[in-house]
Every structure is written in structure tokens, then in C-alpha cells.
Image (tube, rainbow, N blue to C red):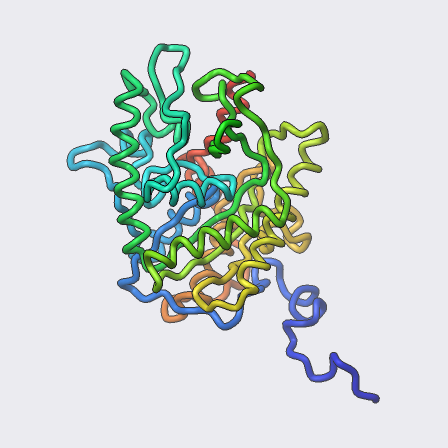
Length: 355
């Protein structure tokens, strides 16, 4: 038989060898040439709702999960969860849109000071427009919002300067901005505070070029203060809950995830070994799994899906702690419910606000 470019390539290059003839729960599209996370490495997380499932799994797997804003001594677990202590490594709330990462860094280091200071809620309390759900009781004044934010940003600086590994989960390309200076927001005004005024706010839907620019910009900023930091990019497999674009939400979701996946591939393609892509999105959404990793709402990820993702995460980044591949796909309905019940997803405020 004549030689061709595919002769002698490893099995992982061929769908039939590593997908068709492999049980779905054992499919393993692991990245190559990755770093190892040591037992003392400080592992931080940030991003969309799915990043919280990653954080839970990181803690459960015995990694050194890093918090610079832990709950105060004596605070109950219920209050800590409600006020998002430990939800992410710092209390920045959901970071859905890539411009939020860049601006979080710039706000923390004083190179960007948004005009927008606070949102007023219907109950007369104020919230931080850049993390509007971290204080359910709100604040008594705009000054309190600013003071709390300044303290928070000091902890964000400490996080960026001292973390060893940052697991960054990309969620959406749609986002809202304050028109005057482009300040990126996690939610539209009027959803969890503030009032929508199209003269003041705009909805944007980033393309691959903008997202890539944001990711490269964030990496350059992070490495300027912490050259040893390693970054693991993932794309959230959780679909968007609503779209402002004039089209079906499924079409908008497909666009958003495609752009994020392309940009993540491009940014790690720059060849810096400190940045890698982990295929959580690819595993969960693959046709191989035929939706079995989604709950009945066809949006949230069940515990079996998280276990598959984290088993491969361990095999990739902590090979000394990996468990043997399963011979069957276990389903624990109680665990699935518990795993999703505690996830705080700012996006869900959209549905509640229009109910």
C-alpha cells in the first residue's frame, strides 16, 4: 500500500479508533504536553457558572484551592454561600464575557476607573454593578459599595500576584457595556439592580478577534505581575440562558461557544507552555454523549458529566492522583441534584427578572 500523510499517525488522530469504538464515558481527548499541578500549588478559578463546578471538583480532588477572600471566622456555611465567599477564589462573581477579565485586572491595578459606581435597587439598597449578586442584602449607600469594592480589588491583586495556576472558564460572547467608557458588566441593568437606559448602556456580541485580543491581553497583564503563573482555559458547556440578539437562543449559543472555542485554541496556539486548553466543553457537548451529561433542563451539567471531566483533568494535570477509568457510567441522582443546587449563576437573574 502506498504511503500517505496519515500513515503511521497515532490512534488519537482517528475518530474510529478513539471515539467510535470507545465507551462514551471513557472518551479521553486529553491535551498533550501539559504541565503538572503539584500538591502545594495554589489553584485559583474564575469565569462563568460552570467554573463553580470546576472549583468544587478541584477542592474535592485534593488540590490546594486558593482563596484570597475566604469567609470570615464564625460565618455560617449558608451565609458564606449566599455572599459568595469561596464561590470563586475572590468575590468577583461570574465573569462571563472576556472583556470582564481584562477590566478586572485593570480596575485592580488602577489603570481603569469606570464612571459607573453603583446601581440602585427597587428596595432602595445599592449593589456593585460589576458583581451585583455578591451581597444579597445590598449596601446602604454608594460610598459603601465603593469601599467594599476597593477592599475586594486589593484581594484580587494579591490573587493575581500569588496564584500558581488559574483555571479560567469562558462563558459568553454577549455582554453589556456602559457606553461612556466601555465598562463591561456581568448582567444587563435592571436585572439585579440599576435601570436600563439604551442611551447609557449597550449590548455587544464579541467576535473571535475581540475575544482573542482580550485573552492575550489578560495573559500579558497576568504574566507582568506573576511570570510563573500557569493558565488552563476551558469553555463552559452550559448554554446561555437568554440572548438579546434578534434570533433563536440556540443560534446565539452556538455562535457564542464557537467563538470562544476558536479563541481559546488560538491563544494557546501562541506556543507558551504556561497556557493550555482543557477540553471540558468538547467532552460534555460531543454527540458521543448524546446529551447524557445534561439535566432535564438541557442546560445544567449533571454529576456524571463533572466526574468525567475531572477524571480527565486529574489524568492530565495530576497524574499521580488519577483513578482508573471506569468500566460503566455511574449515575447518582442525589449527587447530581446537590451538585447543581449550590451553583450561583448570575445569568439566572435574567429569567427571574422577567417571570
